[in-house]
Length: 308
Image (tube, rainbow, N blue to C red; front, side, top):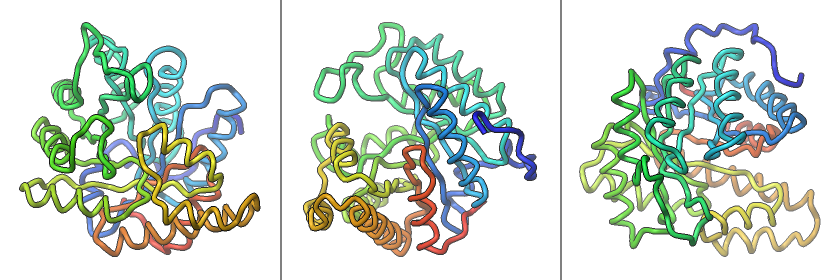
């Protein structure tokens, strides 16, 4: 199934589900994140993963956003097709990188036309990668709270934002990260989703600091099951996140035994997700790398049913 076909499952609610309402519900949300495929073969793999995960009736799914060019275009198209052709509630990603306000308005319009009402608003990484200076588009935005405000003015959208439990690469400390999230909340953000969580204590510190400052913003932690240690460590480095020594030590014990590394990675993800839920996290957002099996295994280990 290269590009998916219309789902036979009931679909009417996918356009009206509010992610903030689900996140604040009695049961934890279970959601999955995909990235835009680079070619037709990758898109086939993506749709296979989507169809497998659709059977779980997750709370919502999202597709990450690449700034500019075909990556951005594929993101918009794939997110729209998920909304139109499956039973899933699709959350759209949108970043400020390389886009004017006019272009951002256009992308939001495409999302609205597809029936998408939940958007994750991000400033995005510098165009040159982490470690390079951030430069806003001359006719664009410099901060995510500005993008949040634009989206809220353009229609009846719910807006989420990014959170950084290990600290944003450009942030000085936990207090600054919390204040940034509160600024986004004041602009209209109704929930936040973190980067990959490998250190649960860091997530809890950020959550508690927000509460101490009077914020009511629910923060959903992201979990990425480790199936390839080198790949995940590299991703963490690119994101400016430290990989906890306790995690790398557990993976290192298995050497080059790929099957054992994968099994350990699944166990680490299960332990982290279970503790997060036990500590009151409003849900778990699985980063799938466009493959469903690892996320399915962790979900099965948790034995939870998603809030929808």
